[in-house]
Image (cartoon, rainbow, N blue to C red):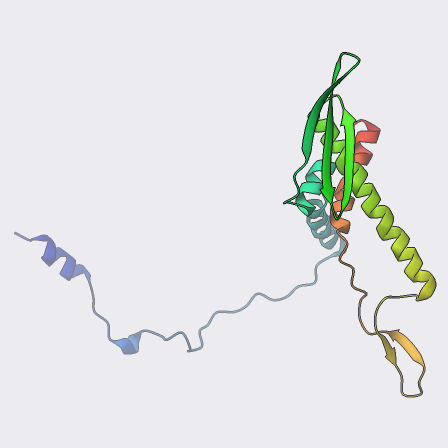
Length: 177
């Protein structure tokens, strides 16, 4: 009669360390050959990346993504027997408020108003800089003293992706799809 230890020891084969290959030794694994991606496949991949990055987002969602710690306060008021809500928040010393029939719509309006002001200041600042200098980055100076192309890509910390998502949301709502 066999016990469980005999069965286990019979199946296990002990091999010496020389029989195992180490990690550092070369193996016969071949890397896949790099192939050229055709134009249609490259466009499909690019569209998939853009689709993930730019989704239609409401002003409230965009605001909450950009400013997570800023609370939006709502107050209920009655005007001409109609219940209205006022949404307010304060950011960078400025206060923004909007009024609507529902809380969510009031929050949407105040966030849209703030984001519109934010975009207007960025665009006016950008056009003001263009009059002074064509690019806001270091320029490469040649040996003869003339200025040539910029050294790098101009840096911009403005959340353009979020504003593209908001613009897509506004476009879809305007079309009433």
